[in-house]
Image 1 (cartoon, chains in turn cyan, orange):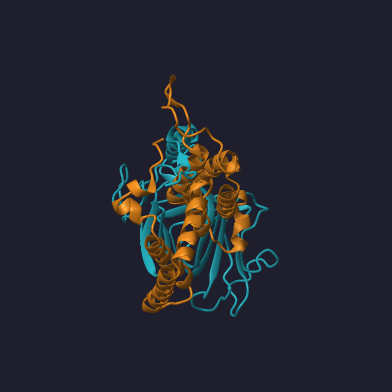
Image 2 (tube, chains in turn yellow, cyan):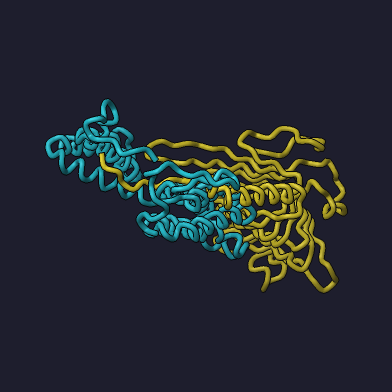
Length: 230
Length: 212
């Protein structure tokens, strides 16, 4: 039998780059758990549910339904420049297809409720996820309670069609753009329930005391109630 | 490295592995798997996919048994290709890139909301695929390619869905490390920590293989 060239993997050499990489990941995980390092979530899935107990959006909220009627909007987009979200749960169901074999994976990213009803302390709350640049494209959107507060007497809060050009025009029938403009103000939303139409969420997050798992989360350490999770 | 063994001394499965029949069976099994992955996105019925893949594999098996030299030649060519480059490292890097890309496959109009962080998953996925190709086609560049794959995998942790929910990052780091540590041949001298150990006389040469 003739000898032919046969390569080998020298694992000790591999460790030269592998071990520092593992150490870096462990360090970043610790920093992320402490809320020092932000993570970036950008998902597209077949099925995703997003829910939260409470949102504080100091940068305001922009809602852009594609169709606005007397009933529910057929399609909505929500943009939140900066948000502090309490009791957040993102449930994404991914289906990995290898050949004709489909492997469904349920993923949960959640932050526990803290039971604190004081919005003034929201910025300092360790259990609240801090988001920057949150955008949703939803087929249904439920914002039961929205409170808008202008920063100054001159920074108005607009609600209506093309709010940037038309103040307080109200909800208009038919297809078009409906905008809630509070970019110069602050907004508090009691709860959010959205079913993303294209299941897209792109955001940069600081998840303090967060959980990540493939099982539906129950009560979390330090929380007074179970995470809101569909 | 062990001494070369004469053909007549090889028996059992080791001898079977050098036979045309083994090559034909190996080619058929490989073809079945490749057909299965390639056909399945187009054929929605699993039975049809299995049937088409099986048909191709049986045709290849029959061809291999009828033309054993051709089967053995193609098998040996692929084996030589696989052994002269960090093949499995490239596979792992490509799998890591695929997962990072797949998870961030987002409508482009949402990407500007998060800037670099939003497009990192897609960019890293494409870059890892290019690195896998680089390592596969130019094995001499495995150090650079492997190190870049490891860095892309680690950086994806804060920038892209927790590194493709750890899985994409794991494969990228594993593949990059394997590519970095791959050598075309076993080294002549072994080094156990800081102590050199002389290899027995007649052992294989140092790193002089293909692509170096």
